[in-house]
Length: 373
Ligand SMILES: [Zn+2]
Image 1 (tube, helix red, strand yellow):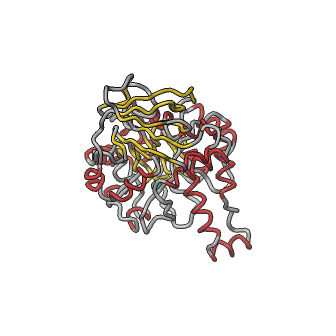
Image 2 (spheres, protein in one colour):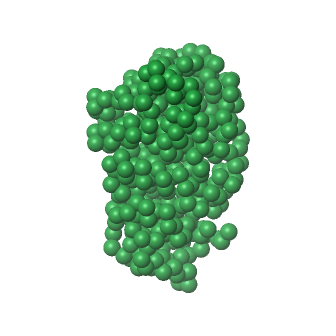
Image 3 (cartoon, helix red, strand yellow):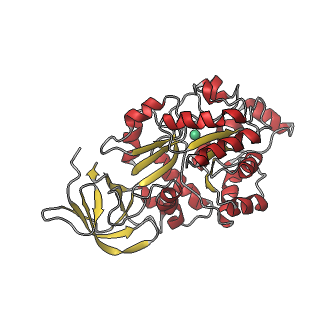
């Protein structure tokens, strides 16, 4: 791994996190983007390419160093872990020079008997028996390094669901907000979206696979300043695995189960986007054998950007969802844009992803904290 030396990328188109600018030179020094290069800087010919902020993956579960290496290879320079069984693992992976920077939620709040505690290995202490436990829960996650709080809002209509009561969710939100932490709510049903709105959540992750989200719901999210990280990549894999399930196919024939496909999820994102709800790029990439599916690290974020464009975002809006918007929502004020003084988390892409989102797949160079991979 090279030191964060002085580098200048020359004659390169720049997507600065907001829009595309004319070709120019961009200098990196001491781990930051700087106004001008030092003498003797390494020259990288940027002609034909586009320089842009490194990607921010807003929903993943990271438990080992190879996951970080894979993310980095695909231009992900910051990863937001949305729930981990062992916070010490994340602590060990943090601040690793030249690897993606990690933030974590530590353990998510769930209800007693939820699959998160019975099957997925999350600590029993993360199952809340009532609103009274909310403050202790938030304090515990903060002690484990949480940069935001995650809460699981199970779909009450699912067989075997263990939904948290709204009163408990509202208490978690209040406790988190008192500590200055955002609340990210796992929500895969329209009813969970409504509960999160009522309880004052900040970011919703996932999107309903079945129809049910209405224009009124979208307007409420917009009015409440709520942001959505839909994880279409995950929803696509979940729909495929559920609809190939024998029990689901029988239930469908008997008209007991709703039609599930990526189409409903894409339509929901389209509805939210058209209503002006900010959309973030996240995939739920994970390697957990107990998870419903395992989107691969890194490459899945490129898939997600294409899916977001398929749901009506322009390529520029999709890129914002993985850079400037993500940084702004999560308070990462030192990244997400190409501007002097910010972290030198930048990627050089062949072609122009602001007109063809598929160009994001052709990554030529990645710098993390000014270190060239
Ligand atoms: Zn997840």
